Image 1 (cartoon, rainbow, N blue to C red):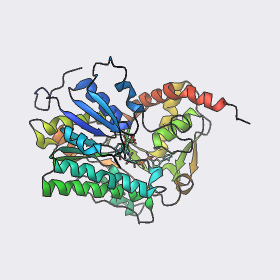
Image 2 (image 1 turned 90 degrees about the horizontal axis):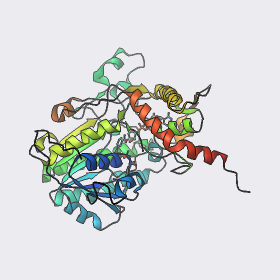
Image 3 (image 1 turned 90 degrees about the vertical axis):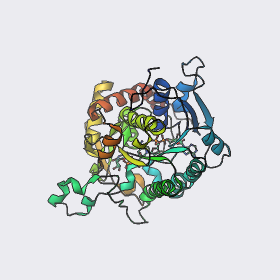
Image 4 (image 1 turned 135 degrees about the horizontal axis):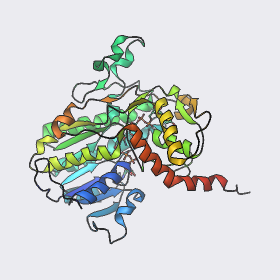
Length: 391
Ligand SMILES: NC(=O)c1ccc[n+]([C@@H]2O[C@H](COP(=O)([O-])OP(=O)(O)OC[C@H]3O[C@@H](n4cnc5c(N)ncnc54)[C@H](O)[C@@H]3O)[C@@H](O)[C@H]2O)c1
Ligand SMILES: O=c1ccn([C@@H]2O[C@H](COP(=O)(O)OP(=O)(O)O[C@H]3OC[C@](O)(CO)[C@H]3O)[C@@H](O)[C@H]2O)c(=O)[nH]1
C-alpha cells in the first residue's frame, strides 16, 4: 500500500466507510483504490459482488479484513442503520441508472433513486454521520441553448450551455417524457440532502458524475447480463464491436457528451473522502461537485467512429464497411424517451475546493477500456455465437 497524505500533507487517519452499491461499476473502482492506497476499512453493501470478488478472495490479499461484503438490498434490510452507525462515512452509490430503464420502468427508477435513498439520508442525519451521495449530471437536463433557434449564434456562447452547480437551472421535459423520472428523483433527493444540511446540520457532499466510463461498466448482453438488456452507450457500442454488428446511432447520434476516465474520476472522490473527515472538512462539506472532463466532448456519432477505430487497433480486426446504423429513439428505447443535448461541466468549484483536474484523453481511455473489453469478452462472444441451437 502506498501511504497517502491528506490535502494538508498530514498522514491519513484510518476510518470505516459504509459503501452502498459497492458492487457496481464506480463502487468496484472506489473499493480497489481505497484498498490499494488508504488504511480505510470498507463495509461493502450490494446485492451483487461479482465486480469486487477479486478484492474479497483469496484470504492472502494484503487488505484482508479491510473490506467486508454484506449482501443486502437496502429496500428491505434491517441491518442498514446498524452498518451506517458502525461507519464514520457513508457513500451511497445504489441506484437504477441505465437510461433504458427510465421510461420503461419509471416506478422502479423513482423508488430506487428517491424512496430507497431516504432512509440512508435519515440514518446519516439522525446519527451525525457524514454522507457522500451520488447524484448525476442528468439533474441539469437540457441546456438553455437547446431552446434557441438552430442557427442562433448564442448557441456558441458558453453562458448558454456550460453547466454550473450553483447557477444552472434543471430543465426537464414533460411528465409524459418518462426519461426524466431518474433526473427528477435525483434532483429531489439532492434537495432533501441539502435541506437536511441546512436545517439539521447533516454533513454532506453531492457528486454529479458526467459520464464516467472504463472497464467493468455495465454488462455485455448475453454474456454477463440479459441478452435483451440495454446498457449505457459504452457497453452498447462495445457489444456491437465484439459481435461485429453496426453501432446503433439513436436519433442520428447528434447528442453531445463529455466522457471522463473512471480512474481520473475516482481520484476526485478520494480527495472528497480525504478532505471530508480530516482536519479540513470545509473543502468538501456542504458542496455539490461536477466531476467530468470538459475537454473530452464528442457527439455520439463521433464516439462511435472513434470506438470503431480504437477497437480495430486493439483487436487487430478490420472495421465493418458500414460501421454504424441509424435507429429512432422510439425503436431503441420505446415511448417516453428524451435526451440531454449537451453536457459540459463547469470545473470552477472542484478546482477551487479540491484542486482536481482530469488527465486522460478520450482516445487513451477508450484504448484501455476496449483492450479490457476485448480481453474479457471476445472468446465468450465467439463461443456464444457458434453454440448450436437446441432442437
Ligand atoms: N457511471 C456514471 O457515469 C454515472 C453518471 C451519473 C450518475 N451516476 C451515479 O453513480 C452511482 C453509481 O453508478 P454506477 O455507474 O456505478 O452504476 P452501477 O449500476 O454499476 O452500480 C450501482 C450499484 O448499486 C447496487 N444497488 C442498486 N440498488 C440497490 C439496492 N436496493 N440495494 C443494494 N444495492 C443496490 C447495484 O446492484 C449496483 O451494483 C449511481 O447512483 C448513479 O446514478 C453514475
Ligand atoms: O447504442 C446506443 C446507446 C446509446 N446511444 C445514445 O448515446 C447517448 C449516451 O447514452 P448513455 O451513456 O446510455 O446515457 P446518458 O448519457 O444519456 O445518461 C447517463 O448519464 C449519466 C447517467 O446518470 C448515469 O450513467 C445516465 O443517465 C444518448 O444520447 C443515447 O441516446 C446511442 O446512440 N446508441
